[in-house]
Length: 272
Image 1: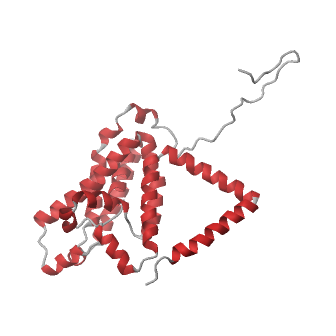
Image 2: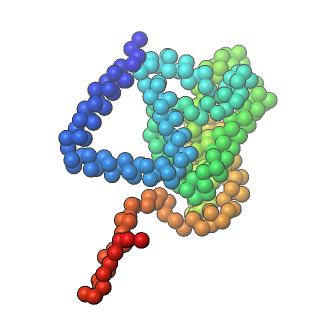
Image 3: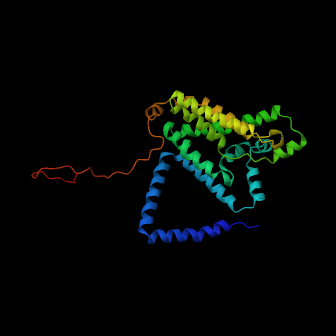
């Protein structure tokens, strides 16, 4: 089994990048500009940044593993009934911090399109609350529904025990539904309708009896939880920032004011 090859390849690649940046002024200038932009973005949305970094680090840990071992790692954090009964807190919080490699694009789009804008609009702690409400609420409601109403055959029970259900999608869809409150009513209704249509279409493609995977239903539940989190938007901060740009990074400005014309007998001083 080949593990660690990505890490071994990354070390010389990183050293090469550092060397090129030190010897190329143009590249160094642009990399610094990108780095400054990323730092400003991180300060604007600290929760989104931390969550994204944690997920990316976990994905990086999975890259060098074989598919079988990768699935085994993800399965230990999956929100199956057995895991929820055995270690409920670890699974509820840990499942949001792990995802498969092919979900990186979804994570990036989620962070830039609605997690960071929501955090900048209603604040960090309210965004955390909305995300956890969607993630934990949808997980528990779907698990309770399966436990109480779904009758699984022995074969389906074995399939469900191997079902991998991890990632940030529950919390992300709840935040997306909540962010729509920032829009005017006709546009808000259109966004909700499009998102709901997409989630229903996604659920219609799933063969629940064969796959025993109820994640699409969890997305619909999370969407409803996000709409129910409307009170989180009823703050003075949200009202003041409702008309702000969706993504706004403040550019650094000079510490000195712009030069103003002065008469010949006037002097200027930097002393305070």
